[in-house]
Image 1: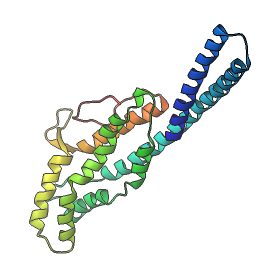
Image 2: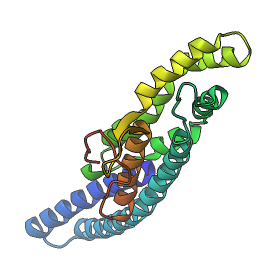
Image 3: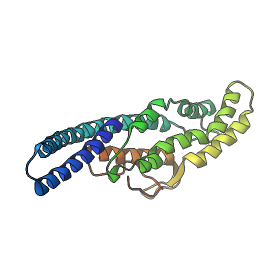
Image 4: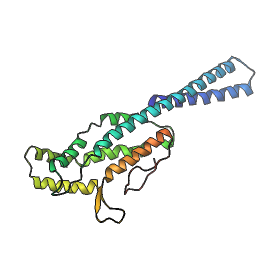
Length: 226
């Protein structure tokens, strides 16, 4: 997208400049070689400008699709993080679910994000960064200290009781308890962080294909514009 965007700007400016030159030469002097040359340059610049727009549109869609697929790949791993219920849940499995997410490679996501370079304000990159890209990196960074302790526990160098406390603390940061519907008593854990990310990913997907956005998952967070 960077190259296509640069070409659009370059040939757009050239087209406007040569059009002005053609108009000035047309009204101020008799037809001359300078006028013919300006007209030819304008025609060439305009054709190149239109080709750049087509190339940009194609490149934009491909780059957005790559970013979306990476977000979904990572989101699927995030969605497998387990809620820990003391006395019921398996401690190693709960720990492993966080380790799997933390160890997920984000290099392709970073490359895909770096390729996004929009012209229209509708595709504002800062919004995508805030709602999707940094949500993933922030989630990974926030559990870095917990991951170190989990690694120690796996190697037999940290007590299980402390890991239980960490997992219960992570419950509060990654899940929201939601009351059961249809008059049933009790509540269930909702994957708040995962739900937020998937809703933003769906919003992004709709923006690629020009579809109407409908939230996929229940979320406590306020909806945002992409």
